[in-house]
Image (cartoon, rainbow, N blue to C red; front, side, top):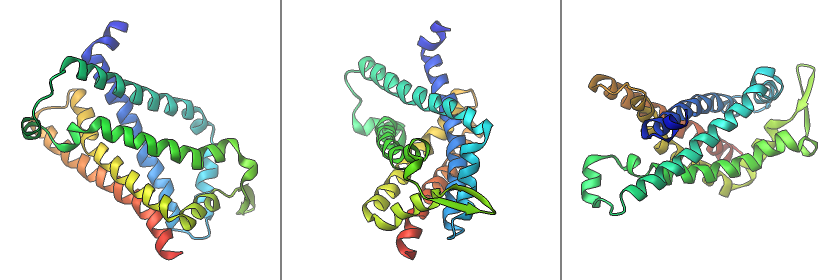
Length: 226
C-alpha cells in the first residue's frame, strides 16, 4: 500500500477519488443552499439544515468528508512540491500555454484560494452551527423546534456587501478549479479515450458553470432584494 501511495499513479489516484467525493458533496451543498432563495420564511432551509445535522447517516459521513478534504488538500501540496523539485527550470509561458489550459496550469493556486474561502466559510457558518448553537436563534417549523440556521446565513448576506463580494469571488474560483478538476479526475481513473474526454470536458464545464453561478446567485439575491 505504501508503495502505491508513494508512486506517481497512486498519488494521482488518491487526488482523483477524493476530488470526485468532494464534487459530489459540492452538488449536495449547493442544492441545500439554493433553498435560501426559494423561501424567504426560511422554513425550507431550516428543515434541510436540521435534517443535515440530525440525520445519523450524514453525521457519520462528516468525519469522512473532513478526511476527504484533508487528503485532497495535503496531496495537492505534495504533488506541487514534487513537481517543482522535478522541474526546477519551468517551461516558458508560451510553450506551457500552448499545451494546457489556464485552469490546469493554475490548479494549485486556484485550490489554495478556494481553501482560504473554505476556512472563512467554516468559521462563519459551520463552526457556529456545530459548536456554538447557544448564540443562534430558534425557529419552529411544522411544530418542530430547531436552530434558526436561515437567519444566521441570511443576516450575513444582508448586512455585509464585502462578504457578498468575497462569496461570489470564492464561487467563481471554485468554478475554475472544477472546470479542470472534474474531467481530470476521470482521466486519471482511466476514462481518457478521445470520445470520453470530449464528453467529460463538456460535462465538467457545465458542472463548473452551474456551481459558480449557483453559489453566486445566493448572496446577490439577498444583496439585491434586501
